[in-house]
Amino acid sequence: MAAVLASNHHGKGRVRVTKVIRRGPVHSVLQFNVEILLDGPTNAAFTAADNSLIIPTDTQKNTVYVLAKTTSFDCAEQFAIIVAKHFLATYPDLVHRCRVMVKEDTWKRVRTADSTGKTRDHDHAFLKAGPHYLFGRSEGTRQPCGRISIRAFGGVKGLTLFKTTQSSFTNFHKDNNTSLPEAEDRLLGTCMDGEWEYDVLRSPDFSGDRAKIIDVLVEQFAGPADKGVYSPSVQVTCFQMGSAVLATVPSVSECTFYMPNVHNLPFDLAKYGLVNADQTGLPHIFYPVDEPHGIIQATMKRPSSKL
Image (tube, rainbow, N blue to C red; front, side, top):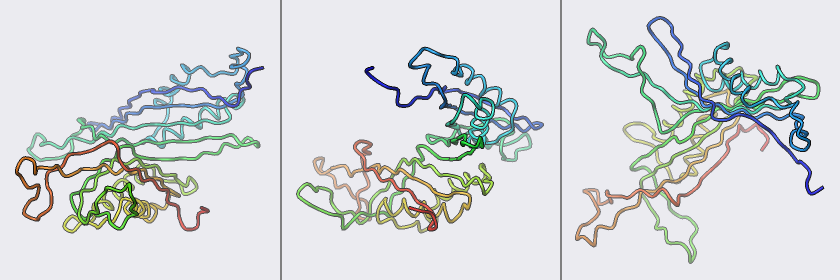
């Protein structure tokens, strides 16, 4: 035999579902992109063409729409848990582990004048926020005793932040390959991905908690509106953002942030007879450089957690 099967799973991806919730004239909308991965006793499907233990991926797709209709939820995290529990409970002999990723498009209510001229949130019109999106993720496992255990995660992809001062990078290691100059006052930009794990024993308020988390991330990056907050490096800012999340949201047990340093480099205008400086003496014409970019990533846990 040339090979043995080490591991396998099957599932369905890119299942798009929109749910409209109508409460009188005020409507809400949830729009998800769902991925399901199932682990079970399916080795024979790969090695012996035995499909009897396979839950067809089409069945998995249809289940997403049935659960969207028959269950109540108001965010991706809740729906991810619902889907994972369904497959583990419905197919005890076929599914030992279920992993669900639910990407959620963010639709914010349009603010416009109503028929009386008062500006307010629209009852049924929405504006898509971006480029970032939120997601919920669940990992459900059947224990040897038959009990189902669930881990729940939330996160954000592509949260794009930028500030024009209160950032520096100095006193770094230098050698013969170093060309980066020290910067006492620089632009700071990132397009961050973040994920946090919920302590399900604390019964998280998923919608409320994740709204707090996004607010905390933005506020910690920016600082007070009139003074900002100083960032000596992306590393320090990353740790401060994670620390603020853990301090503000008790239901979060840990968080991981991936924060590429998206550079804006001063453009050399000397060849055109111009000085790239404004009245402060600092450069003010830049060109964005997406690639290559610096990579900064860290996981923050509470002090009582085992590292």
